[in-house]
Length: 175
Image 1 (cartoon, rainbow, N blue to C red):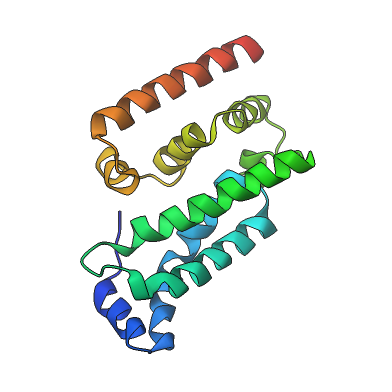
Image 2 (cartoon, helix red, strand yellow; image 1 turned 45 degrees about the vertical axis):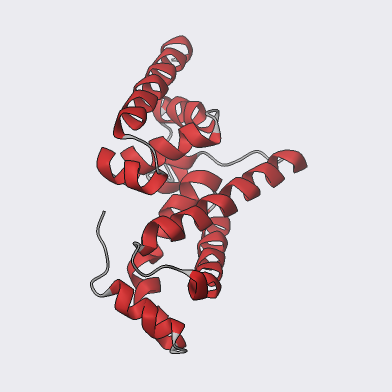
């Protein structure tokens, strides 16, 4: 997981009142935040709104942030919580989400396998979808996932194995 150089020094400056010092953090993590949000909510505008809201919440919470720790795991938990809240709200309201792979990778495509895979991923539990997005779309290593999610590497590997098995079974039955 790539980290912004001097990130903790930047955060210390923000804590001392230099609001503009937060800009390099926003620029550095903006695309990753958007892509993660998009993976959960499947709507470009909502992903943009959520990622922006996550930066605002992170900024407001920096007073309590321990600069001995990395910023991204703290920030990721904010994005994740916002995405989970959004998803729950949309389900309660009866909204159907867009197809993730068509939104991100091929807006004009009509590929049956991608459609089936996207539908299978959409049907996963939020925690399972989270692992798929972070590992296979964002490219986090097992070690990075372990640190980010606070789970042992073996648990991450085992969970991904069973999620892939579940996806494969669903795809073999539907395609």
